[in-house]
Image (cartoon, rainbow, N blue to C red):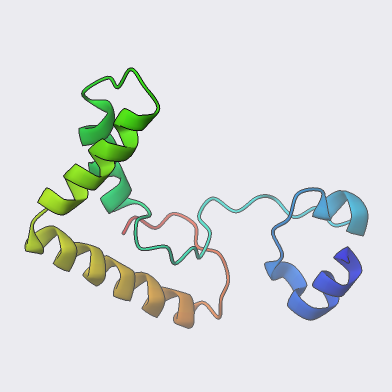
Length: 104
């Protein structure tokens, strides 16, 4: 499987033990081209709100995430979408490679 991934995706593969099985020395990239909307800005904001109350059960963080997200402003949603579009543009410009030293 690792050989197929290497042939098809080249140096864009990130998988546990990929370097060991393929003999490559690829370092884990500092920033992946992850396109999840909640990455970076939004999750940091939600996490501060959720864990700032020091939940004592497993159900409390889930409820707190829902409450925090539902109470966030339209401006925050616009910021998240703008950041997502910026990351998409950078990903296209870098031909799908990983980014380093970039703060969005």
